[in-house]
Image (tube, rainbow, N blue to C red; front, side):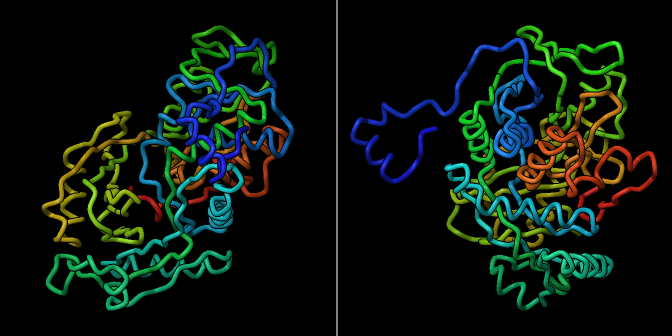
Length: 415
């Protein structure tokens, strides 16, 4: 793998940047692999990388029906945080945030990670009570959350001029999550892809999985693709909102439902907001990118959906809520808008698990899976390599639905 550095940049500048190596290879599809990963998004690529780095498993193919990093990893609002409620959830996301801190150096790729903190704007007393409860539990696991009064909240976010005493929902407090940050979503996918390729992992774009082959005991023996069949005894499905599209065909019913999540981006403006602002009572949040664009996220569609556009009602509610808090943004123009498909479990916690089909593993149910990419890939790789769960994901197996041992995290979602 070619090392990126100031020296390599200067050297290639002298040759007109014509001598850079390809970021990753495009090898022919082989006949057999030790592991096949379906989905070249953040979780699939991270899993492949950690299989090679931590477990020396390199005969791995990552199959992607579209282009690398073209799914949900490119359709999100890039927030990285660990402000969860449950004892099972907090350590997992604390680990993920800690991995993000050193990921640019480890992958030798600038992920534009900025640990700028997130501030919740609290507008109702039930929300304040719930968020204080989360703060106390987070403190036990090394995650930060602190209460801000209204004056301090407005000092930290000068552009927050709405939400006064005469507002529909006046601001009553704030909560600051210092560990939160953002990163460039494309760079996360490209960085993991480049590092995985350097360790011998094969990345196959435009290779759609059309079915699976199974042995006499029902175990996985191969994967049928649009480019032919490959043999393998281990398959990991990391396809976000389309998980059940593949698992239903195997007769495996997972407790997942898919929803569309709304987001949009404004034209670039001068630095205005230097934190991630979350408004949970209004179901919207925003941050400012390094290019100056305001990245704004809203709630989910009210019904199950695979759409990738915006539902006008959700869009209008989000814009109304943002302008109520930030009236100075009313003349701002929008550049683009999109939706991402989330597959959500009934308890709003992820599923990282073996299945009842031998050789089949799933990583699904991520509500905002971008923040979980490093830890999700690390733990799924451990599960595949050892056929035993990593301690961080043991509570997130499919067994919890059989024993009703749910990890209820609905307080961190917009549903």
